[in-house]
Length: 97
Ligand SMILES: [Zn+2]
Image 1 (tube, rainbow, N blue to C red):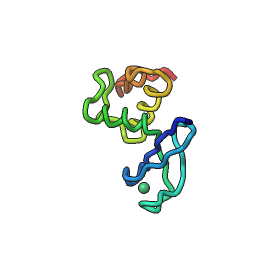
Image 2: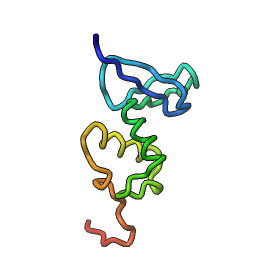
Image 3: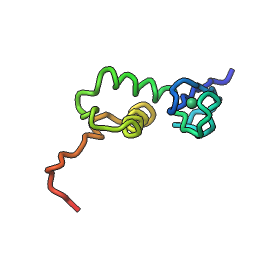
Image 4: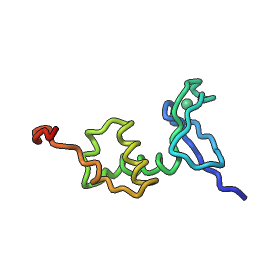
């Protein structure tokens, strides 16, 4: 039996679709909120919710917007990165450009 992967609507956070392939996200029209939205991988969304309730110690989670939080969650879940890899640069840091 093929594994099934849930994807959650990022607009209403209420609708989940299931697909038989594993990608970071889908983009489709949500039948619940009727909006053309990104649907995020269920594992990524679960990690996002974990960090929302228990922010990672080595990253200034509260400073990120939702899309950045989801990006970090995706990299942690799907690519084996650590939140520290995304540490927000201090704004007073020397510009190295
Ligand atoms: Zn929706």
